[in-house]
Image 1 (cartoon, rainbow, N blue to C red):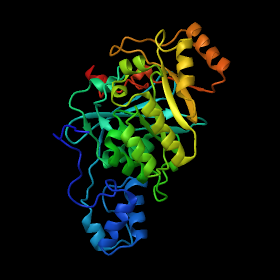
Image 2 (image 1 turned 60 degrees about the vertical axis):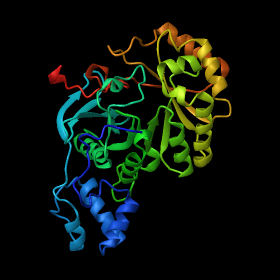
Image 3 (image 1 turned 90 degrees about the vertical axis):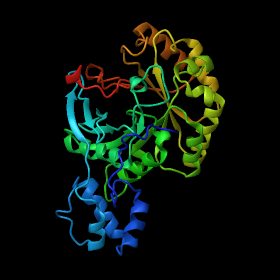
Image 4 (image 1 turned 135 degrees about the vertical axis):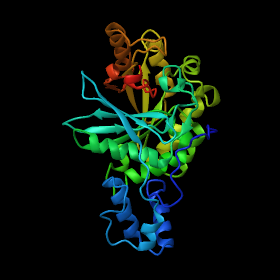
Length: 355
């Protein structure tokens, strides 16, 4: 997808281990006279340990060390906010070209966290309930900018980080190569940020990229944001549905399932009085026929950028009972972090200090 090229986040010329997939890094290191073990050691130094200078990097061929543009660039952490309700942490970073991006530390269980990272500054997909879509001049993030969110998130998290989710700002599959490189780095044994199955990549349903993902037999999990299984409602909420309608999306989900052999995550934001009726459940049941799925439901976070509200308890009860009647399993996700604008759909690169 075309993006604004002004002020990209490219690293200086040279060998930045955060900008290449591990296999590409290994090839570059071997070209410089090193071996696979040197590539792994370099990756551990820069990503696992978070070092941006060669200090402490031992047993490495001089040509490899000299090829890295030390000191490596970093995102500048400009704000950290913690929810007063649940221990969600929102981290705001400034890029080299002065843009603000955000990531979130999500509490999981037993003091553990997932780090939710952004793949773009802004987004061109225009989903109605997403604040990110209102940001000006969208651009892709470079792999190193994505990886640095993981590195810094792990460093400031109050507990161990065991999963990485690409559900922050942007449409990950519109920045396919950089996102996949970052995910491969995060799951590399030398880094150990997360196992491949603990890395989730969200998408609004970019069907060609989903088919590429399936064809490459990627090990990461996809999470498809559905919005609605009713064609008109989904097209209203998510303009991407006009490009790739629901039948094409279902085919792409089946293709990913065929490649991975696992049920696919279907995520749906509950909008009170809009997509929480029994007719929506019937539409979902039809759409999910022959689609091996795991359905995840989350309440919409209220905000000034959209007209929707979370469902009332009565609406939720009717909706959930309808699922039970048709025998559709589902999980409810906690919609936390709204008090710090960190809930799903609320990331917009807006600092609290600036209002």
